Length: 139
Image 1 (cartoon, rainbow, N blue to C red):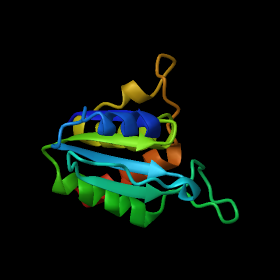
Image 2 (image 1 turned 90 degrees about the vertical axis):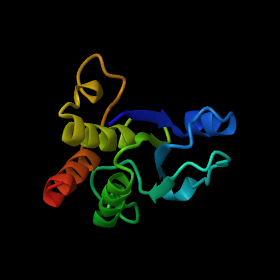
Image 3 (image 1 turned 135 degrees about the vertical axis):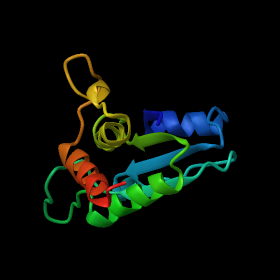
């Protein structure tokens, strides 16, 4: 499974310039207070998730939920033979946490997202919850 991580701005630009194939599926993670629905002329399959880039709930600020995890897994399973773009506001933390979990589960490798040479800083709550959700599904 091919997985790419992009920032929200990079994704918007690629969609606007029609640089994303219609067979690519998109998981868009955004801050709840800054939601944007993308112009999607290529008719890519997109799911939108809204949670903050935090690893524990703080007052009214929510983390990735069990429902978010279920939506991610169902979206992946219904598009299992397609490539994925996972996007969050900066393309560094939430999206890389989700991408690393998916890559580890389906490809057996998440090293692209960790270590000194990586440009990512994965949100570990996203990583753990998505990876555990995949393990529990026993795909």
